[in-house]
Length: 386
Ligand code: AMP
Image 1 (cartoon, rainbow, N blue to C red):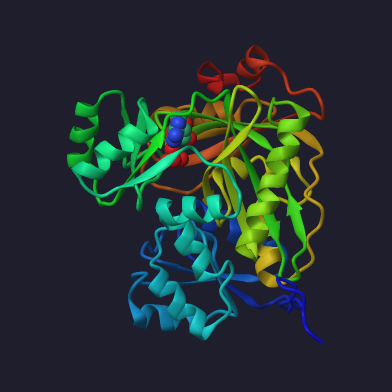
Image 2: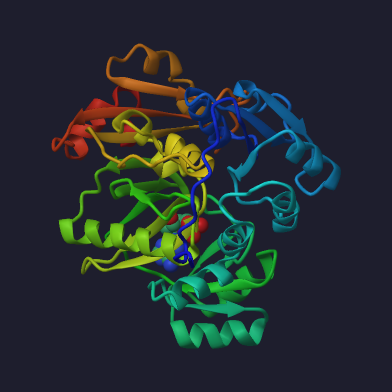
């Protein structure tokens, strides 16, 4: 009997099994904690012996993500492999895939690591993005400006994150100056979208093709880094439903097993364009830790371990505020003393500027997410930035 595409018989890992997580940051930490709740051990491949994930894991392999010896030792210690950040080499992940099951598949990571592959894949699957063109030299930059117009954003195709590796462009002169500066090449020129807001959907897909998708959330950035997420997004029901449909469509087109965040721009007419995808737990899904019976991290572990996926229901409205660098961490004692704030600390020793140190969730009865002033008041010591 032939199997339907994307429908595999799930192989459930029994409790006591070991989930291997490539990457030692906060997403690995929170995934490891969710794994422990389900009776699994987490084993981390990391270069930081005392990093956020290593502190809570049952074991670690300390080594470089490209080092075949470290990769082999890591594979030998685990039953299944997943990853928590995108700058792992696909070669390294493919080596792991020869030794143990890897979810999501290395080819999905490869797509998400490269804006050119990502946008080509999305457009090929019928998913709209900002207009874009590949830029490899001065002539292709001029051609891209002529085709797309200005203002625009010039981005590196690889290795950009949290707003790094990109420049907003208003004139051809600025474009050429940014082209000279931005590395690595090639670059992508994207039309500047005058969006109404940014939203994201975190969707899990199991080995059997089952999907669980968390409600659409609205995201606000500060200095290129996520600052606040509002759940649910304050957009029309139609736009929220379209965002859900897009999340599902992308997960299915990728034949995802695991977790995927799909970040989108909502245009002023309510239409949606996908900006980026990330096949891992996502900062814009941290609200699920307190507002949902099953968090994004548990959903991630369940999908990777072949467990059933419960519906991604939400029992409360929520605001998530990131705690960035020394300024926000100076408020930690006050945050702890403020009723209603739910703190999450990543265990990082040094609060450098721009570093994600933790986050705070605040819940509201379902259907009563307050407006901006109410949110500012509800965040207590953190409220000024809301
Ligand atoms: P990215 O690294 O692509 O996620 O971009 C970081 C942030 O820059 C996004 O969350 C947006 O706020 C902004 N941005 C990126 N691309 C565009 C675009 N084409 N038009 C307008 N704003 C953008």
